[in-house]
Image (cartoon, rainbow, N blue to C red; front, side, top):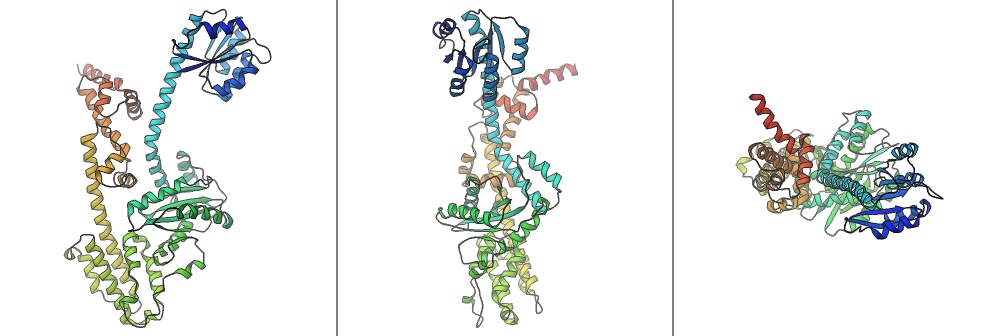
Length: 533
């Protein structure tokens, strides 16, 4: 209900308006009154009325002064001025303040209610527009997050100069002006190294109450990244403790995070990323389950798994669970750093043994073969991998052999995942095409697909380059254009037909996407027909 507040120094007029007008029947709420602007101001700020009716000539603080102060505190309030003087200077000042109407006294109750109702209609239209805009922003928030993640990829690519990055950041409402920058990489895993769970865990970053210099981005299966601005070792220690305290509250997870070196230029953030990524690639070799470190932390290396010294070639002395974890969660670009750490962990003296090197290559080969067979591959489908088993190598060439085996294996893994993901997204699209007219939500479709909403959201954006809600909206609006051009259905009927219970929101979305209303879109049909005639 629209709330009214009256400021009038004449008691009789004030009482008449307050007691002799049936505000409720008019669909209005009389929220209070005061004798002058000074007394009224704190009451207005407390009650926050939608419409202020105030006399101009009053002691202590007149109506114009009050209007200025109220408009500053409550910009959306509508003001109606009352005056016993037909003075153009008052009207001119009122327009400058943003007053809605200027009425001359005496004025009847009926005339005042008529004016108030006219203003109330404008308020309700504004509120409805604000509600629709808020709903639209909420639905488009997923798109904004996708654009943020794309921006992060641009940021660490090193392809853009400072000015280009600032323009992109401004469009995303990101503040990136700082004296220095550093990149923090984080991976969170539940037992089983399940990707969906990892995605859900990474959302923790967005719930942390850090200052604006803590700016998180999703990296999908690779976890999350945070751009840290104006950061030094002391502030890092504070951030680290807060993050560790938050993560340690979650049962059944392990986490690994690395802060890269500080750089002075935003365009140099790639350097911090590379240094952090190098240490990040070593996460498969450390026994300590929960680690947050600086890229240069030397104490961190003490917890590394060390395979040497090896007294003989005994497979029990090589812990292949490390390799299995890498095959599940590692990426192709991490292979060189992974191999470096793996070979270092074996020890220089052991690598002088030709027999040991051959054993390592063959054991890794069989580890990769078994892994791919568990993914559903048959051995005859893995010709690219099986051919690597016949590769011979001269002394010192074990690295390229291992790189080829691991690259081939992760390529097979990614192909199987991408094929599975393509089928899954195809299934989701098909579900939307057949059910767009119902109350479809991300949670509902995720349940239908048997995956988590967060995982579906990330996967859908990756596979289609559109957010889930963008795709659903495009399907619905495409059907709406068909119904507008091929049926006599009204816009409200079309709205329900395509899945929108709120016809106003349907019209709002339609205009946002096509630049014209549904009515105007339909009118084009008759214009085209007349042109043809």
